[in-house]
Image (tube, rainbow, N blue to C red; front, top):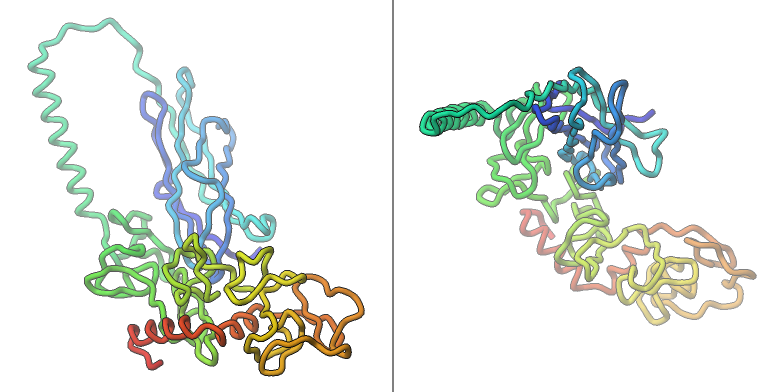
Length: 363
């Protein structure tokens, strides 16, 4: 079974309140270098009931490469539950390959305490109660302030899984370290989950940075080919502002980076002037500049896409994700289609050049 997820619990024991309530916090990290659509589930062990354990938020979540999320499980033992202990754990699995790519978090032991018996109200001096409450609240505030002061900051080790507000305890080879998420204050890239820090702005992603491999592009970025250059751009489904931000070179009207595999179900998934062809590929119509036959709806390129001759045509329709070239149906890479589309998009190329200049690299 390949290792995809790291699942850790902030604490392995949870004592419920007298009313039978509490919550357990987990940190889930996508340890792979590819995005994963994960399915989360709470698994009760002996003595626990499924209805006592409620996952906060959506059970299916998107994890970018090396991305981390905080997961909360709310525990509610009904009134009358006998005092005792039970355990449960969090299971995380790849939605597309649940049997081969999954992880089980550590067991969390929950202690159920007995509720104080309802008794007859005893008359008390309310002034004494008010003073006692004031002293108690003051003591709790002091303890909380002291606890916050002890919380490790960005870049600090977190062997017990605890970090300060806005930070995530991310596992690394030499142990856990507190990392800040995008937008959080930072002083160096080593303090950020994204791996990149802009002083005065916070943790960010280095759009436009030169790269040699996916490892050079942290967080939500991927190393994309841009007509002979390799640049860090946003992966599909990431939030975007411009076409230049995305590895697919297409920021949809919903401000999400489009898929970058060149495939489609409708023209809405194709960057103009490409169109969604019969084999569900975003290809160019006749008259558009081209560099390969596969980039054309007609299957024929001679500087521009053109009607193919009979010798280029196939006897029967080609299956999905292939193109008819020289009488044969051949598979088409999304990378080829994306690169060809850039020939008709000088605005996008100019935007990527501006990003590279902002990162201090030569266009």
